[in-house]
View 1 (cartoon, rainbow, N blue to C red):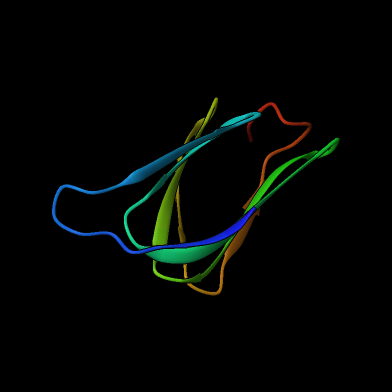
View 2: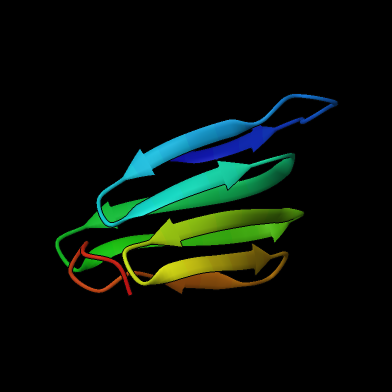
Length: 72
C-alpha cells in the first residue's frame, strides 16, 4: 500500500497490519506486508507504529519492519 493522507484537526487514519498498527496523522507513507513481516516507510511526515513490543515513531526518510509479522 502506498498512500498520501492529508490530516487535519481531529482526523487520523489507522491501518491494522500483521504485527503492527499504524496511526497516520498526515504524511506520505508505504506499508508492505510479506512473509517476513510488515514494513512501514515514510517519505515525509510521521507515523506511529504499535507492535507487540512497543510503540515506534517513524519519521520522514525512515523505515521499520516487524519480524515475521509478529512485531519487533
